[in-house]
Image (cartoon, rainbow, N blue to C red; front, side, top):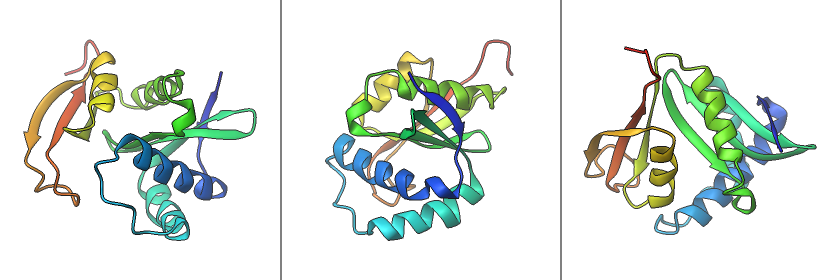
Length: 152
């Protein structure tokens, strides 16, 4: 299967490629990406890796996906499109939950029915919905939360 490890700056270009490919494949309703691979790589290096704990799923030497956690907010969980529905997302989510003893929240576009179903299968429930004012894409979204048994 895959192993999970902390990401580092050497992973930034691959994380950027996965981020861009996954968004394009899983969310075709989003406007086309305006940022280049180099720009997204710089964002990974200068923002993502500095503000979040980031894990990558690796098989052999290939990075298959990543998850980024800021506090108790899952900011990103993206997979290479060719490895979806193979348990990689679950491995990453399990790692995030291990590091979130009081629970995890996330936001997901209402239109992203595959992601919503994935998180619901893993025990997330809807906390609220929004008309899109709180995201830069201006699309309706939802806040989901998972709380472990016994947590407040």
